[in-house]
Amino acid sequence: MFRPIQSPGRPVTLVGGGEATGTLLNRALTLAPVLVAADGGARLARDAGHPLRAVVGDFDSLGDLDIGPAERLERRDQNSTDFEKCLAAVAAPLFLGVGFLGGRLDHQLAAFSALLKEPRPVVLLSPTELAFVAPAELRLDLPEGSAVALYPLLPARLTTSGLRYPLEEARVAPDGLTSTSNTALGGPVTVRVDRRAVLVTLPLAALERVCAALAG
Image (cartoon, rainbow, N blue to C red):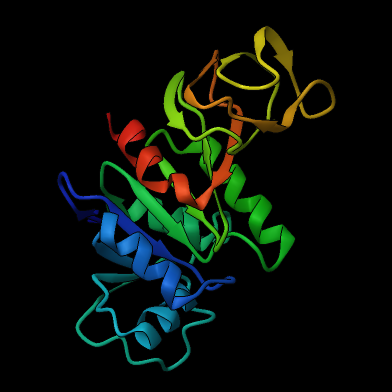
């Protein structure tokens, strides 16, 4: 019987095989100290000198890499990505994802789809930006001029404040109105949305604020 990896009360960093650096992984681990790799993401963890709690996936990219004492959870379901397999295999309150943005566009789009289906907060990191799906209500204090992009992956109704271009009960959709290329006025930024549909993109500098807001 499958039993998920338990990380009660402790955020988890997931590392994938896409574009990432040891510096970015170090940044994630300061906030989410438990490390789980999606298949070939174990290479970055090894190269950066970080021990793994587990490696999850179909292992088509792992090869003969020595993962030490880390738990090895092989999942050969071809209807889900290694990123989704990791989310299904780990019980944690919050996830940071390194190595899932950049690189192959199809992998990145698949990661965004996974965010829509995952009810727990997941923040994907690149060397300059972060992305997550907005909860029903979100409040962040952001410096004036911070770039804020709200992109609807699905049709939704969106209200925002604290932005240069606010919205009030606006109908947004991938083929209609979006709210990209926006900026914070400085201070509280609020987002209200009627469903899990809107991808939020912010500068990486906002990571600590985002984690605190999503954990609350």
